[in-house]
Length: 92
Image: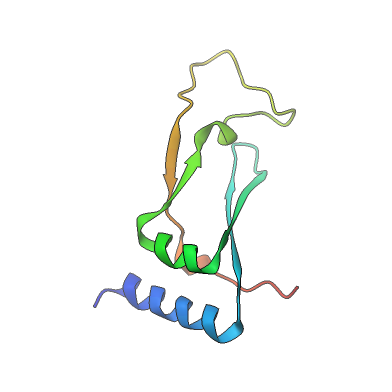
């Protein structure tokens, strides 16, 4: 049994025990602005190891939501694999 699968089981148990229904996936862009997706807890259980599709364009916009046209940007989808060591339950 590897450490990641053990952590996945612990998180799934915590989600069930605390009745968590949704999980937010956060990723900072190049300016430190948190870009987020909210998924159901059951969906999160499935993407803990396989990842979740993510539009990479969200990571390349500036603070005014414009693209920097001075350099080429590949606008496609990427895969966000959650860092399970950062899983936390928010107090609200």
